[in-house]
Structures are given as C-alpha cells and as structure tokens.
Length: 209
Length: 186
Image (cartoon, rainbow over all chains, first blue to last red):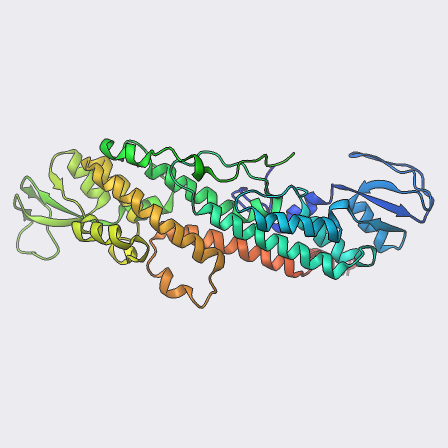
C-alpha cells in the first residue's frame, strides 16, 4: 500500500495516515438503539443504550459528532499510563516503549472530537506531546549512527514517526549503499570500516506487535 | 549512461573534468585558441564528463583527477568534513566521484567520498530536523546537490507533520462541488 498524494508513492501524507488510523477500533457507549451494522470491515453493534461496544474510530467520531455516544478513551490514554511511558522513554536512551502503532493520529482524532470524554484532557495532551518529543529526539540521535553498514533497523516506532523520517532515511541509506559499493572502495581500507559494532546497532525491537 | 531519465545524473555528467589530449585532433577547436581547427597532442583542456568519458574510452584523451578531489580537499575533509564548502568545488561531488572512480580506477576517491558523506550526513541530519530556518542559508550553501536533496526531504516531511498537527481543514472541498449547476437549455 502506498500513499496517493505523493507521485512517487513512497510516503504517506499525514492526512492519509490519519485515515488509516481511523480503522483502529475503540470502545464507545452509545445512547441510541440501532441494529447491527454489517460493513465490509466487519460487523459492529448491535447498539443498545449504556451497553459498551467496539467500533472503528471513524464510526465512533461520526456518532460522537451527532451526540449519539460517548467514547471511552483507550487504556494507554490515561494519565498514569502515559506518565509511566514518559518516564520509561526518558530513562532508556535507545529503546522505545510499546505504544499503539497509530498513537499520534488516534490521540489527535480524539482531542479534536471527543475532548469531553477524556479525563484530564490537558494533562493527557501535554503528556503525549512530551512523549512524542522525547521519541523524536531519540530517533534523531539514533539516526546519527546510520552508516554504510546499516542494513536493517528494527524499532518500536509508530506510523507517524516512521513516515516523518522515511524520506531522509531512505535517501541517506541509498547514498551510503552507493558509496559503500566495494567496487569504489580501496580493499585495504575496508577492514577498518568493517569494525564489528554490536553496541552501535541501537535499539532492535519489533516494529509492530 | 546509468540513468537515462535521471536529471541529476545528466547534470552530473556536465561537470568539467581536466583532460589531456593524447593525439592530434582535426576539425575541432578550443574556445580560447581560435587560430586553427586542430588540437595538438598534450594540450590540456577541461571537458564535460560525458565527453571526456567517451574520448577516454577511445584512448584519445587521458582524464586527470578533477580539482575537487585533490590533496587539499582531502585534507580539509579529513580535518572537518562537515564544514567544507563542497558546492563551490563541485555541486555533484558524490555522483561525479563515483563516475570518476569507475573511469580511472583510483579507489582512494571512493573512500574519500564515503568518509566525506559519513561526516557530513550527521550535520545534515541535525540541521534538518532541529535548526530554525534563520540558521540555514549559510549552512545550505555548503551542501552539494545530493545533500541538499536529502536536507529538503527531511525538512519537508517534518514541516508537513507539523502543519498536520497544528490542525487545519480536515476536509478539502473539491472545486467542482462549489459550483451551482447551470440549468440546461438557456
């Protein structure tokens, strides 16, 4: 799958990522009575007042805008959880905490349309901002280690973070690959460049669990 | 030619390289000396790379190492690669370097390119993701075309993310939708 807004199809726009994030499910408490909805992506409902149910975020936001439900913010979006995550992010220089793949987009969607359903919304918002800033900083310092020996990177990054750094990283890696071509480099210099660097590999974790 | 449709590849081919004619050539003239339509052997000229390459393959000229890969530049890159003004020396430093290595087989240039990129890459990374726009013009003037491209890619993706986060119109109305339909048959 590739983005539509970029002619080369190599990156998504932020709005496209937001669109993809809207397919994640979230719990809502409806206040209307409605039959089961049978959609291509699955069946949702039936909707009964005060009975919680799981729906995609786009549906939750649409219902919320019409005043037909309250959204229950996901577990990770509580002040305690986010404080923990932020502390853990600050403590470890190289590893990234497990957050939902679309946490940037989901939080923005909920902040825009469901502010009254999130307890301590200002606190949550600033925590997420802080987490995001810490993570971007770590990504930046991690990328400094990129070199011609970098073949694969596995990080616990979210969709938006990957998307922001993608053009730069792919461009940089391509150039490294091109210049690191053994045809161009003197044989005698290669052992020096080929130091085993276990510490240099940086964080290696699954991109998505 | 590696990438026929790649504009950067074509422009990199335009870079001048010093060459020495090995044979006398009739029917051509240098711009500076217009007395005769003939080039003597051992006359030094600067040719665009694409021409020098073809002539080199036909053993009509011998290509020398361009001044941007000379000893002085090497020392400067070794000392502080991040602040060497490569653009004024050769705006396609890396592209031309790769081509020159393949042509004359001087592999020290290849290592120089890698070392240069490794040191300068970090600077580009830091500047692109953090620096305020007021800082950049001076720094940008040092970068080669390849590095500028990388810098712009990083800058624009970061900027796009920021504008999205600041908010803005969620839905963009297609221009067609705003218009009122004209009644037919008037």
